[in-house]
Image (cartoon, rainbow, N blue to C red; front, side, top):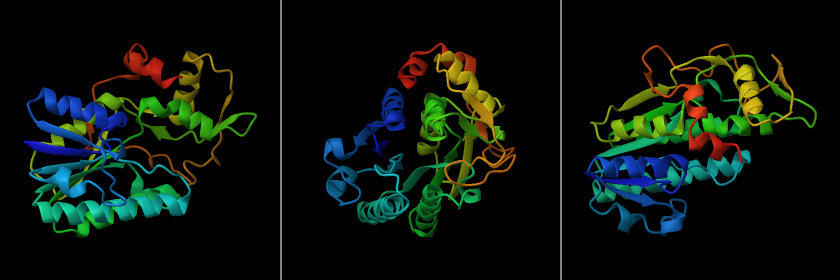
Amino acid sequence: MEIVVIGGSGLIGSKLVTKLREHGHDAAAASPNSGVNTVTGEGLAEVLKGASVVVDVSNSPAWEDAAVLTFFETSTRNLLTYEAAAGVGHHVALSVVGTDRLSESGYFRAKIAQEKLIKESSIPYSIVRATQFFEFLKGLADISFDGDKVHLPPVLFQPMAADDVASGVGRIAVGPPGNGIVEIGGPEQFRLDELVRRRLATLKDPREVIADPRARYSGAEVGERTLVPGKDARLGETRFETWLTRPAAKAAGR
């Protein structure tokens, strides 16, 4: 099966390309590094020629609200247009669990817009909503740090290893289009503040983590279950303590 991975040089994309190739698929890693730019359309016609599946795991290079929205809308429109011309039969996009519950956030408004474009397209699709990655726990602390303490809401949280994200997306990519949303998550639930506190401890990071019910997540208020998947979610295998023993944990702490 010929599969093009948009964002193929990133954290999830590079893992996904490797896994697909190991299973005998012809997987192409497409990104600006390889001359493919989904915002300008550069290289899209060439890389999509002959592809049966396109998997979009790309992310915005800028985080300001308007820039993120422009990226996801422009990139997705271009992808869908070029896919239709190339006869692609399955568009797979990586999104985030809780996206529809986080519309206060500019980033998640952009993801909602991306999902809407995909659903309204004529191309059969699968949207994979994943929970947060273990690899980004330190990053969550960084953006929640006010110069004194790390403030996080003490809500339920069910993150997963990036390897498991890639495996979950890969399984959906090689299957038939579901024309709907699939949720994937980690095998364990935690309190968000508790898990970030544990992660910082493993990194010998002295910052104090405060359970703050008023703290926001990516600019949005969150409830007890905003960030966790539903009962039908497909769960990864890697537990947090197991992940901590792997090279990925050391790399993510740098």
